[in-house]
Length: 141
Image 1 (cartoon, rainbow, N blue to C red):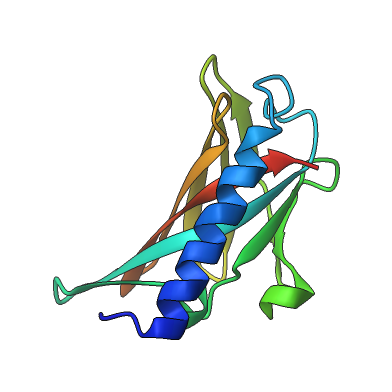
Image 2: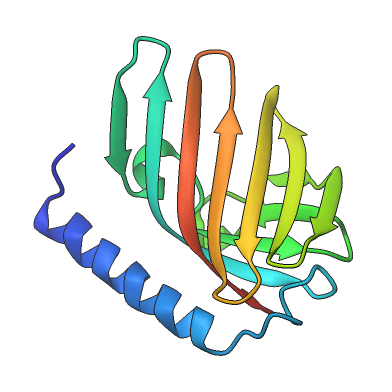
């Protein structure tokens, strides 16, 4: 999928925002004891026909900004990103190098891994007909 000028500009802006988010986070802050804000930088969506498409979150109707609310055990999109749906965190585990969160939403299983040192985030959302790989950066809130 080709980016237009506006989409490329949005991708650059999200990349810059992501770098800023990561700069202030420490590994201790990303251990699951505090809530986080995550900026989605890019998405890859693959269907059962072996076709994959790369683009921005809004192109796939996914939130551009996610709040990981550890006290409420929920991941939710923000009003600014157009998606305010909550997804419960069913499992959370902090390892030496990453925080892993897992849940189920609308019949899709998801798993989010956040690198505790850099804040880099990778999320996989899998369903019957399509799967998404979501990449971004998180910082403690």
